Amino acid sequence: MNAAAPVPAGLPRDPAGADPGDLVVARAWKYDGHPHWVVPGRYLGADDHGHWIYQPAGSLVSRPGHGHWADTDAVCLVPRAGQWLGTFYDDRAEDFRVYLDLSTQIGWRKLARGGWEANSVDMDLDVIDSRSRGIFLDDEDEFAEHSASMGYPQELVSCISDEASRLLGSLGGAHAPFDGTATGWLARGRTAFSDSSSR
Image 1 (tube, rainbow, N blue to C red):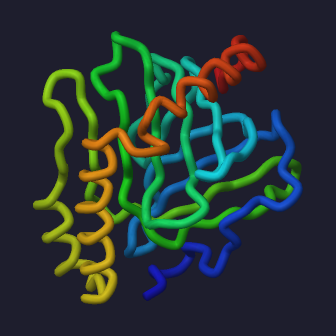
Image 2 (image 1 turned 90 degrees about the vertical axis):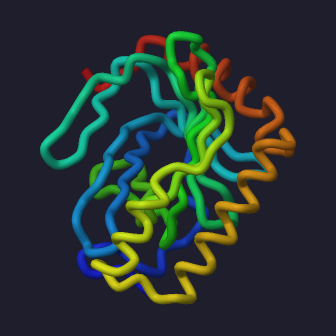
């Protein structure tokens, strides 16, 4: 069920030896091997849920053909298990509170000149907690379209669909880590890296 080359496969789910402050580049791909979003940040640490990355306002968020400076601080959670990555916000200027990217082939590898890369294959579906719209599932049309055009295996389609349903319930029920856990990690990131960005 691996995505097309050059997407790395078989990477470990834990960055053994990662230290707080290490550069982390969150790198997403599409299933056909095309590059998707790239977001830099700083490794904060880990808990029972997974590994937390601070992504400060002012960081360059980019994908082929598009780039912008992040308007607000965020923390990204790379969970120890599951088929998703989570980004958490607490700024009222940002409509999103939580943005969960359904993903596969999640794993870590070291960068050649220090730091880490957290790789994933974006599977289109997103579970979102929005200030304006509440909690909802997004991009179902894109998921259906890419399932056909990129040849998603049926087993993967079922896995991602089931995970999306589970996340909708967990987010709606404010189950950990969607219970405010990210607030402490955001505060930790701001304290340690308040002047950090990729500008």
